[in-house]
Image 1 (spheres, helix red, strand yellow):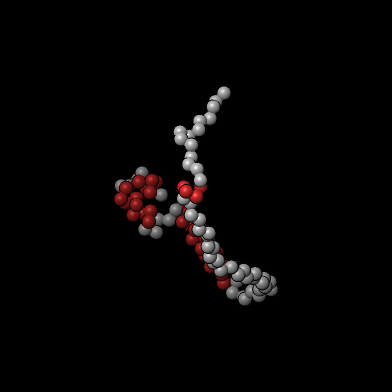
Image 2: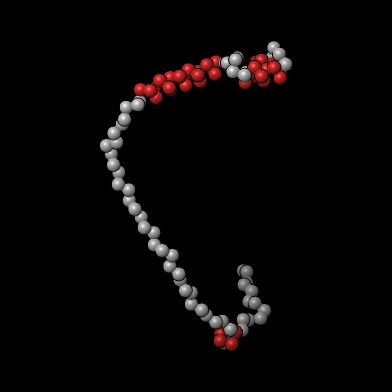
Length: 94
């Protein structure tokens, strides 16, 4: 609507006319018509509805946090018994 109003007046006046509510477009008319029909349907649905379906909820109990103690292991070079080969072995490419 701003674009179509700006073709006839200045941009400032076009913006004011677009948002003032006194110059509604076809979309504004459709929205207001939808709102009035929505209000009418709200008045008709004031009768209480009975919920006949009762779904039992499943309750899941999650296990509590269980601490896991990792075993301690001491690695020292004297316990291993040998040192790694120097220089490291190389793979032969054939």
